[in-house]
Length: 139
Image (cartoon, rainbow, N blue to C red; front, side, top):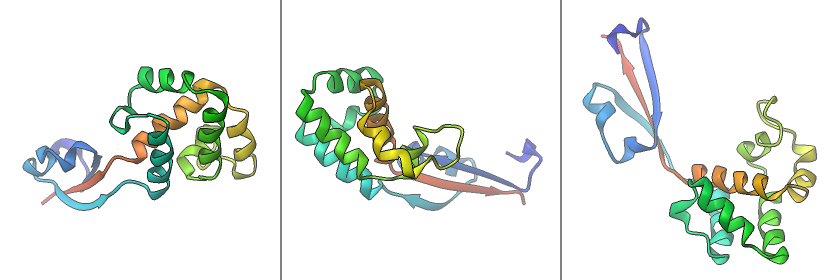
């Protein structure tokens, strides 16, 4: 880190909660961000539909589960996402904008194909992870 040429080095890590490798390298933990409350609500609905929360990071698993849903179950998933306007979900429909388009979001969720729904589920899995923020200061 001393070779980075900056006074500070910042890092966010999911594994930082479980493995103190960055702290052993001299970084200090400054914050820990738990799971998003909105993502936790979505997880409850997904759990009712048989999704395993531990596997939401697996593209293959998520897509297979989404494809196995009947129309009523798929609408239930879309509805829970349509009610959740987290910036990460909005951005998934307009990657060229930093925060997405809130006004069009609900319509886009309801018209989303199975692959897009699966990508929303994967984003939810990411939002459920606890992230640790670390900083190193040049001495």
